[in-house]
Length: 154
Image 1: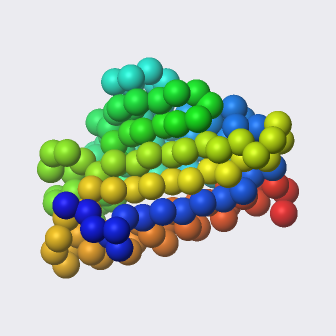
Image 2: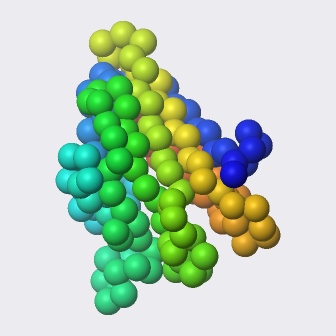
């Protein structure tokens, strides 16, 4: 069970509408601009949320969220999906139920400014899981910096 210090939380202020921000997390072409090389997302409850960082790899379970699903959403305010680990983490992260869970909240400040907050939960209590959590803390932080740069043109 997560304790507050085990939950990953990352936020960004994006200079665009909440609906546009939502698209950066759900539109395959937008996802490939900032988070992954290839995306296969079906925007429906139970739809695929599959991102691929090494799409040429014949083993689709390496460095991907292959098999992950959208659990809930309310456009443009909320998105919730499953998450898996990379090739080095898949032995312990990808074979547990429930998988780790990502919630993204889109909080409009006005028509062209939105705070996006990502909350990644589901971390177990051992050294492997702690190393994976630290890895994803850095990965999400870096990804959000890239997203800010692309959206805000900074």
